[in-house]
Image (tube, rainbow over all chains, first blue to last red):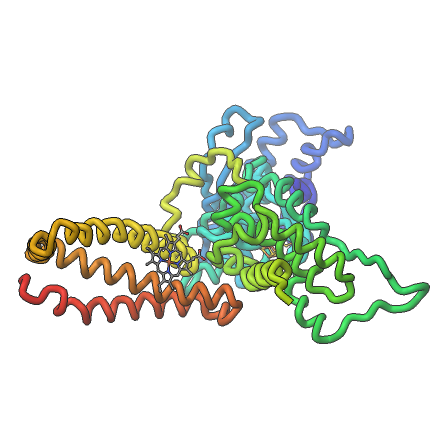
Length: 304
Length: 130
Ligand code: HEM
Ligand code: SF4
Ligand code: FES
């Protein structure tokens, strides 16, 4: 969650020692390199000055409007938006811009990130009114032409905000766990035998295996917003990934269909396609949910 | 996730401007579905006047049709019905897993087709009233 705050990024080496020292001060828990107030102020000011210079030197800048909220600090209890002017660089992602703002203006700006390559799923944000991965969203793509004047960054809607851009993902993880998102089989082959999957079957589940648990889909879903018990697109997609995998036996498949066809399972989906629109891994979520609806109907309609 | 902490600023922005095609289709479908149910009651009420004899029925209909607002409501009813049917077919295809990649285009097509049919119907509905 706060990984970024005390760990300088590699390409940010231009930063002076003053900032490094200020960071070390933040790490006073380690017992050394403690700075007194005035030194911290000086370091902060130096950092602000450097930011100003970078902004002045830049050909183009972007204005980030970032949602801020911190229930633990009285002055920050009231949600608000902060503006940060960030120099634009070609190839800059929303995450890059946020990190620049954090490193140059306000080290308390809090957001999750880790892999920076759309793999870990930790930086789903609400950027300009849409759920997107910060690291996969080019700032330049947010404008019809050129670069956007302003980018609005908020935490995922319909989730509880812990601080700034960090939301509580617990409920999302609970829903994911509830569909038993792991391979199970009664008759695993003996010894070192492989348990092969046909090419066709692999193709069928291929897209569904891509989920990175970012929660963007759940946040975009109007039904999930109003119904906490709804499994949500990601969990149903997980169920699809296993229910459609032919290597699991019939009993298990039936067990999985029982899970997804319960009251708050697939039938809550109203095919609004919001999840499919936002999924950063391009998983055809609605398609998978609809396929499971059909499987559920087929399971219950046996006339033969 | 809905126990959403009231984010004031964040959650009550006029978010509807950010809805995508599928979301609009859903809203319109709900709306038109319920308008049709509402019409069903009106329809039954008007038809029931025939219980009091043919003259009453005829005069009721003539009375209604002489009102310009009723002519416009009829155009509206057609719009609502046509959209509901076209988008209903779209939803049935979605349920069958057909053409899900073009769901946004089929929604726009429903809208355009509805518009065209409604425009073409205007002379018929307003004939003699304006
Ligand atoms: C050919 C004609 C029609 C077709 C193809 C059609 C199709 C559909 C479909 C597929 C749905 C389900 C939407 C979903 O998946 O959520 C639906 C919902 C609905 N329809 Fe129709 N429909 C037709 C006529 C009507 C009529 C005549 C009425 C009114 C009397 C009506 C009222 C409704 C209502 C109230 C809903 C539910 C809306 C909601 O979910 O709250 N429909 N329609
Ligand atoms: S399905 Fe897509 S949007 Fe949903 S959690 Fe997985 S990767 Fe994220
Ligand atoms: S930082 Fe890992 S997905 Fe964006």
